[in-house]
Image (spheres, rainbow, N blue to C red):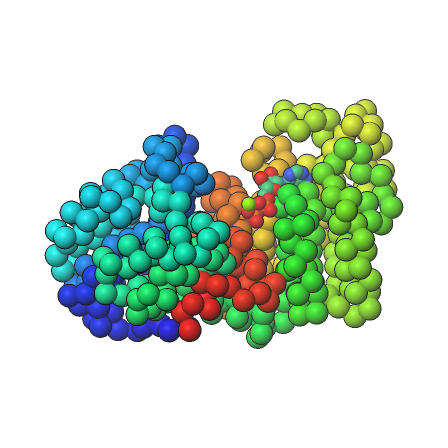
Length: 406
Ligand code: ADP
Ligand code: MG
């Protein structure tokens, strides 16, 4: 991976910086600025070094044409605040407005282009279409700095083809994310504990597969739990389950028995009468989950208090912890306790925790959960900006956007 330490190599150059400014929005209000703050360092350092900086990003999933719902315009102001400099905004990607504003750039100026995915070439399956769009972007600049870790697992024009067309470098965010992921994979201080939750077991199978031989403990929470409990023959009522993954899960449990990581599963679950914030709910041991007034129609929405306490103890005693995926439906306060307890055990102030341990929070929803639950970012060693990308890295896959920076 090509990196740089001295940003002054870019003085008087026009540099395209691919950031991941794909922040969650409610209308035109940004609900979590984490990715903007994480992207600021690279952009600021280039501008301070006298580069002419063109920031490019996507937002959401528009369908390859302009769509005001997905405009990056609201992000420009927040980015300006994060870097402490003005940020100009172009209302298109490679059109008239972008061309005019690029031509106006002076040393130290920063310009944000409109959502890359307003152009079908960005995500096209057809390589020649991606190349054409990348070529139009490349025509603006002398160099390319790839800093959008959240998209490096995608073979897209601004991530992959652009690196083929310009002198390219990894930005400081991509460098930091790769360094942390490499430490988790290859050199974790032990005990190394991996905590996995979230809604779908199928998203995390690859990570379980690759980490079962590397981690000491695998703690399972969230909606994933029920595919494991079903594999063990428990009655899970109407809880989330992926029937077609039960055999994979059985295989992992066997590998764990045969000397892999210890897989810990919940001993108790918060069962609810329905999927609603104010649903009636009961804590039940895993062999009596449907023993509630809701019967078979009850569903599990959080790990129970005994489980949360047991997980917290293992986490607090670990030298390295990677956490991806909330332990329950944390969006509903009644089902946020498991996630809160686990998050607290990962913080720097967790009682009894080793002083210099490494804690990593991966996954968009997990990062949003810790902030929504009132924890501050600096309580954790590293909060990853790339959910899918960090998972794929930990699966041991080659990521196109990293490969392209060789
Ligand atoms: P991340 O983005 O951190 O990787 P995921 O996208 O895999 O996490 O999953 C997050 C979602 O999982 C949250 O919206 C949460 O409500 C949901 N979830 C957690 N536990 C359960 C459960 N028991 N049943 C249904 N959904 C759950
Ligand atoms: Mg998610």
